[in-house]
Length: 121
Image (cartoon, rainbow, N blue to C red; front, side):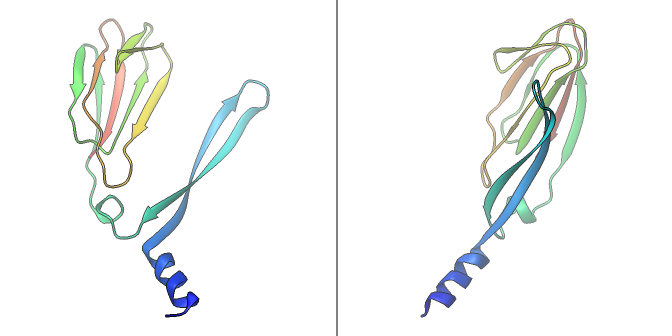
C-alpha cells in the first residue's frame, strides 16, 4: 500500500472542523476565535440524534449524568452556584463532553436568582 492510500484512509477516518465563537476582549473589543477540532468520522455524536432542552430554574437542582453539553446563564440579579462555584448575575458558562463521552452530573443552586439551563443529550 502506498503513502497516498494510507493518507487517504486517514483522511476518511478523521474529519477536520472548526468551531467559531465571538468573545469580548477588554483591550481589542469583539474578537472572533476559531478553534480547530478533529473528530472521528461516523461517531454517534456526529451522526446520532440529539435531544435539546431549555429550562428556567429558581431553586437548587442537578443536570443528570449523560449530557453531551450543558450551558448555564444567570439572567437574574444575584449570584448562582454552578458546579460548586459562583456564577455572577449576567454571566454564562458551558461545558461540552469530548466526542463519544458524556458529562458527569452538574449541581446548581439558583435560589434568589434565575438560571437558564440548556442541555444537549
